Length: 108
Image (tube, rainbow, N blue to C red; front, side, top):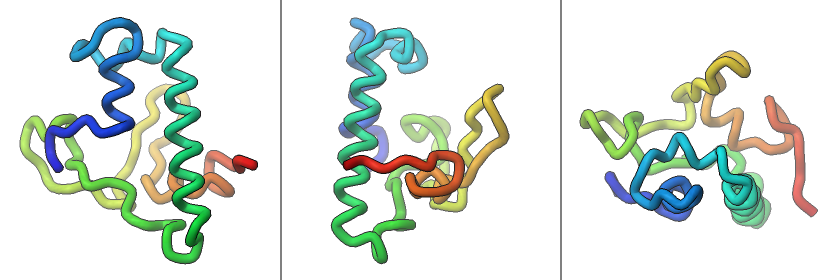
């Protein structure tokens, strides 16, 4: 669904007291990190219910541009995520695997 914030994107637009504002300011609010921790935890719970099928399941129904502006194709798990100055780009599939790749963590 293009243009829909969803549970993840909605947090970016409501944290830091600026609903509907700049999503890039939300990491400046400590609550943002609680939000992201919960999003990651919910993802892990969903994944762990059927690891064989869901480990590299498509993680997105969104396009490769924010809010589909400009209009673009749907993202795939082989598209790159550029994490900026903190490292080289990774494929989405590498971030969907919390047990390996650049992440290496598990929720208990």
